[in-house]
Image (cartoon, rainbow, N blue to C red; front, side):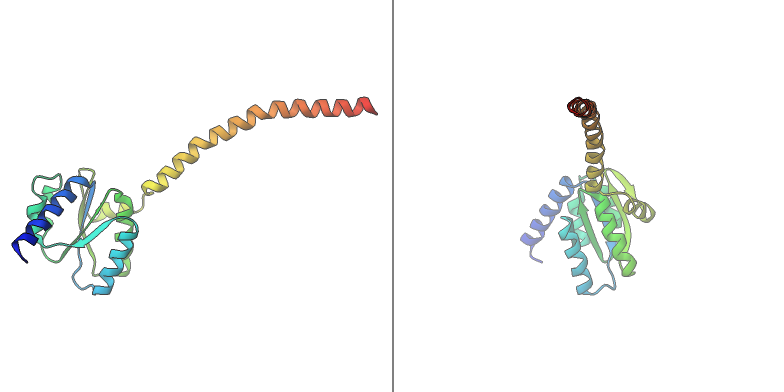
Length: 171
């Protein structure tokens, strides 16, 4: 790799490590190109960066970032997933690793906390940020709907009473 290309790659990694909230480290040894491409496309659909990294460049790129303590994990055939939604990334990685045992989940750092394999599995069972947002909106809307029906109910009841009373008086 040319020196300019290496400097460009390190700069991209530095920007990535300073802007994201979670990094997942995997070993992909034994996966075919089509399997890695399939995983990469699943990740891309969910707006998660997933790529194979050159360990020496990654160790330089991670220096000075909040992920610097992951440096020792960058050895062997490493691919990383970088995301602002760690639950979604964990779900995709865990699901993929169930079908493809060659993908090994080494570890992660999520919102400043290091997470091991068991932590990644636990994280994958949580609802994603989008699911939590939907639940929150539902919880907020439910009282409003109930309040609206309570406010409308007395008026409806009064209208029915008047309707029955008017029907009796016309007969």
